[in-house]
Structure formats: C-alpha cells, structure tokens
Length: 110
Image (cartoon, rainbow, N blue to C red):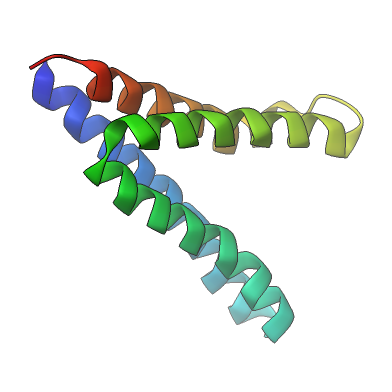
C-alpha cells in the first residue's frame, strides 16, 4: 500500500503535465503563433516543474497541487458563468486527487 500511493500520485501528475504539453503540439500544428505557443506552453512547464518538486517533497507538493486544483475549479466555474462539468473533470479533479495522494504520502509515518 505504501508504494501504491507513491506511484499513483507521481504517474497522475506526470500524465496531467503531459496532457498540457500535448495541447501545445496540437495547437502549434494547426496554426503556428508564437504568442499562443508560449501561452499554452507555460502551464505545461509549470506543472512539470511542480511535479518534479513534488517528487522530492510530497508534503509541499500536496499542498500546492490541492491549492492549484481548488483555484482551477473556481476559475472554471466563474469563467463560463455556469457550471461546465467536463473541464472540471479533466483538469480540476485529477489535480485535486494528485494533491490528496501527495498529502497522504507526505504525512504518512513509515
């Protein structure tokens, strides 16, 4: 059980970072715009850096990913003016789940 939380939280955050970085490839293939490229590249790079530091310090990573998930869910809710479930399920919930898993791992006594 100890190693399961260890691997699930790391795989989930790596997949989330990869998802944002794949958006960059898809958008740059369709219409190459340098401004759009950096706008889409920035969240992927930030998530990759957060993932790296979360691997080193799970307590801090759990706090940061949980706060980021709450921020993303609130921003998605208020950006549309109505509740749109799909972006919350694809970005907010995986970030929240990975944050909680990092917190469990960080505060667990081995």
